[in-house]
Image 1 (cartoon, rainbow, N blue to C red):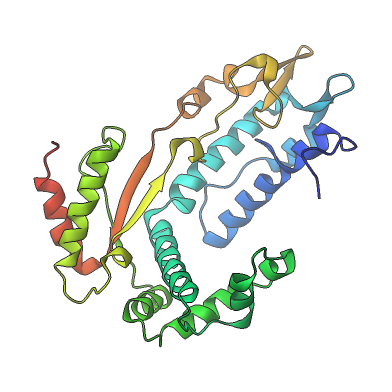
Image 2 (spheres, rainbow, N blue to C red):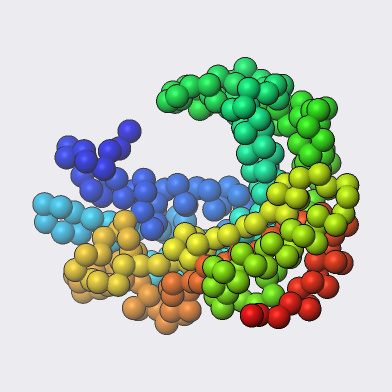
Length: 293
């Protein structure tokens, strides 16, 4: 394990594992592009890896030569497009919210002493005050899918229904807010959500509205499609910026490539909701009639 306070580990080694341009990102962008069939995650990874260099005195850090700038630009845009078109795609996020709703419902029932047909690895993890790494690693993808299969026959009708929807790909539809989330304050957002829940609640088949009107909120500072470098040059490092070495001086890459300037701005918070398809027409009608107070 590489610890932040580990004095015996050079900074550049830590940043090689976790930074704005690290080995993890180089791996998952290409791998996810392959397995999803998306064409966005392609870039000249070979040049990026083989041209990285170290700069500085005792506290050396990662930099790249100017000749690698276009390969790095490809990487930044690949990251941008993969997040927009794959990781934050409305279908992907919709199923993630269904999974979260199931997990939250089952955990609440478990904490109240109710039986929710838990598999042993999940039961042991939830029972532990401080779960161990081994307990965490025991909850694999197949464990989760098996658990959801069990929940299809749960006595909790809402939990059983969401489990069925998840496994049968009976997805929810996305409902955007009436106005840009950047123009909505917290009060207006809460008012809109309450109105939308009331609309969903008119459909008598949904016993628990909170499980059928799911909010997806993404804080701007966590909105990962954007490459957000540290602006102050004197505190920049490979952890918070990608730097090119030009005539022995490090420059943050967006200062050298104008095409990157459009995606290095702090994005606004975003929020949207997911509701069953049977509620789509009514939800969109509500949105079209909505007036800001």
